[in-house]
Image (cartoon, rainbow, N blue to C red; front, side, top):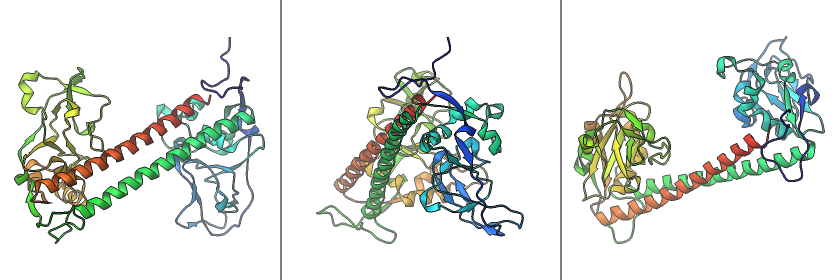
Length: 406
């Protein structure tokens, strides 16, 4: 028996099979002639349905170059980036704009939802199903209009298209709002860091907790921490459920926390490597490669963790607040230090001696350090919460796209 043409997830009340239709029965290419000008702007289609915009530069053609008028609501794609989801719908502000045939445009027949079709075209599974991926890769491949219109898609009736698209749009809008919320928190933190730490040439920060008046002092990490040591050079093995092996790639680029997915354990006798187990006040730095400078402050909640060879450990002295010290590795000043110090003739890198030389401004009062460190810690948690919400929404949208379409 043939498999029913229905998606895995569906709105209640819809039971009819979806129908497979060729795109030339759904779309018709728009070839409204424009001017023949030697100079014209082109439209650019962003990848994975991220929109249609004017190309910033002027496109210079010849007297034989043909330009076509594009109209709002038309579906458009970029020929060379077809396999990277370069599809979009022309917005109202670009109605009547001219472009070349490098980005062909199509009118959608009235009984079909343009945005529903776009949701199909920007899914990676669309290309896999069409068998147009050469050697299993998505290398640039020019897809002409005839090839595109000869493809087929599975579609429900218009009312179901509208319902599905409405849900996808609401999810996308939530993702946009959540991203803005996350960006606001990040902007707030960046602003606070600029005001909670002294600027160049200053001895006190612009914003301070009450009852603190003394000048701050500038100290190198070598005066703040000890035991700048390199990590463990052993291979990894399948995670044993207890002993974690942290490498550069196991530190999240955004929140600098240990990534709990795809954990591994060190492939060594644990008794022989106990000196490499992280403990309270340990701060790690990535010492080489594209991630040089990335930092991680050990959290007791991470459990039993051993650190790998491309990381450097600094043990923060108890006279200093660990969160305060860690926040200094997230500042623009630190990033500038990493950029300059890591320059090598080959792969970028910073050794233990160089990390030990990095100087920070630090309050002479441990209480002031703790108050600043605690504030930044709480703000980090808020940012991480917003990031988690964003990832959940992205996962939801991905799930809907994978299960509400055929």
